Length: 101
Image 1 (cartoon, helix red, strand yellow):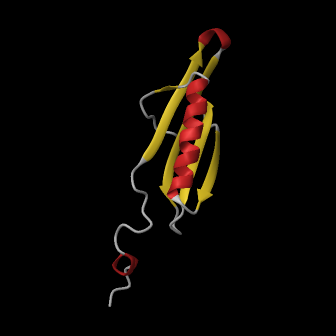
Image 2: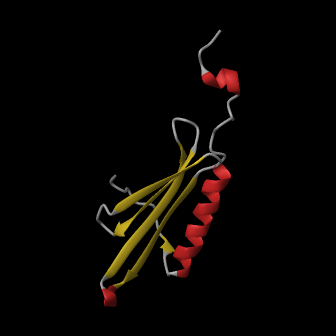
Image 3: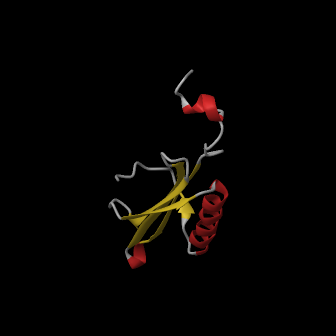
């Protein structure tokens, strides 16, 4: 008998169904504004969905906040709500950059 949990539970149980990642920027040189906002949904080691948000001035570390949910659908709902808010404020998609944690 194997001790591998995936054999007991099936390979797809508890996995995030698809990758959710977003990186957007908002710049206004006249106001000396250069901001980024990044989000991603990952699975915790306990099988929960974790939405991680990072934001700040472009080129700086900024801030980070994590939201943990029992169900992936809840994390996706918040992801989409935040995306809608950022687009309304003028953030636009950019090439994903390496973000220092």
